[in-house]
Length: 147
Image 1 (tube, rainbow, N blue to C red):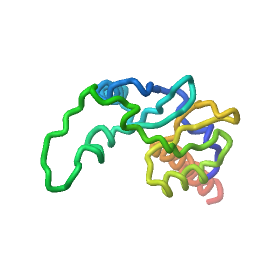
Image 2 (tube, helix red, strand yellow):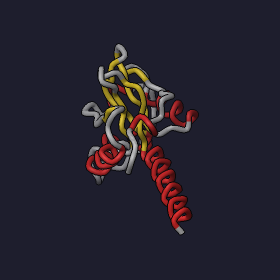
Image 3 (cartoon, one colour):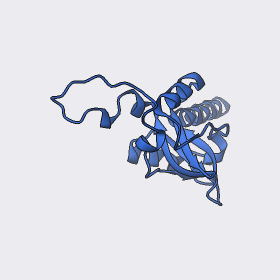
Image 4 (cartoon, rainbow, N blue to C red):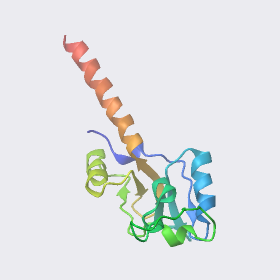
């Protein structure tokens, strides 16, 4: 897949702090129609939280035989539930490398860092589908030219 991460990443970032309540984070994602929120502290990436974690997180079920309702409340903060070992990519990396990272780690998005480790974007599976669509269009137009 040709191209660099910077060509397809989403630059308009919505980030949250470790102190934000999980209920507030959930509604922010829902209202913004996004599925991943990078978590920052002093402008540095410290974690990521996804809507999947908030809908029914691993920590909601202590034991498989215990049934209890899971309620989103702001008693828990983003910092309590975020993934701290964040898989990231760089603006200058190839889309192929970033795509492989998504597959290898079974994640839906990668925060994008620049050369100075500043968070500058996010690359989601949807962004990669856009890149694939562009590639397919180019391929189709090349076939028409050679036909």
